Length: 202
Image 1 (cartoon, rainbow, N blue to C red):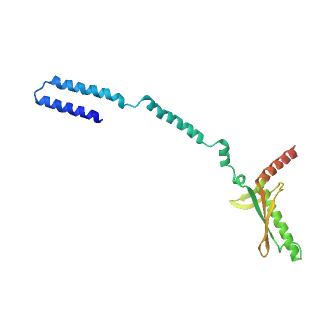
Image 2: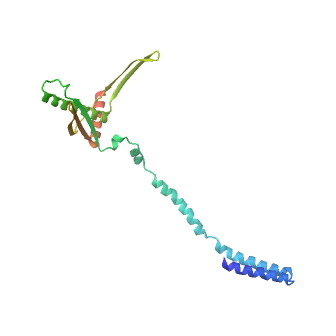
Image 3: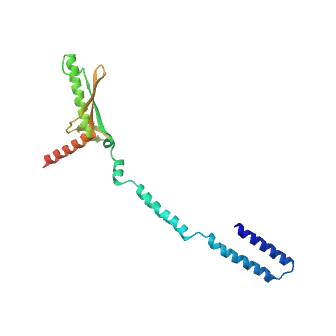
């Protein structure tokens, strides 16, 4: 740009001097034509080359490819929406039982029965987590007043491989038993149970 400014300034100054000196108008026209010729000679060099113009288009074409690679696969999407039960490494369940209500007169035997009952309650809780539970409910309404509201639940399944985590007294009259079940065992149990249901319905 500096190279263009110097001839343009000199030409304008020369034209101004010629006009003041009584020079003819065709002289200024010749200087103006020479200046236009110099500008046209320099203009193509200032324009970007075709290769430079093509490079951004290649970069723009590569951007959608990168965006397509960054998108999650179908397996990853399925993992995102999987239930929390499937994401946990182990299932845990706790069961409770009261000592004083056990059907025995000996206090030591009552404690043993309470431990047994709390363990079975923990197994039932594990079964609910592995297989779910069937719920039957009914509600009767007359004159916009609820007459009866009943529900019944049923749990069915097979549990094996459960690990006994702890048996602890939570108070003077209650025992708590905690069990855990590995995720791999849960898959095997569900497969086994579905096979039994299919064989039973045949």
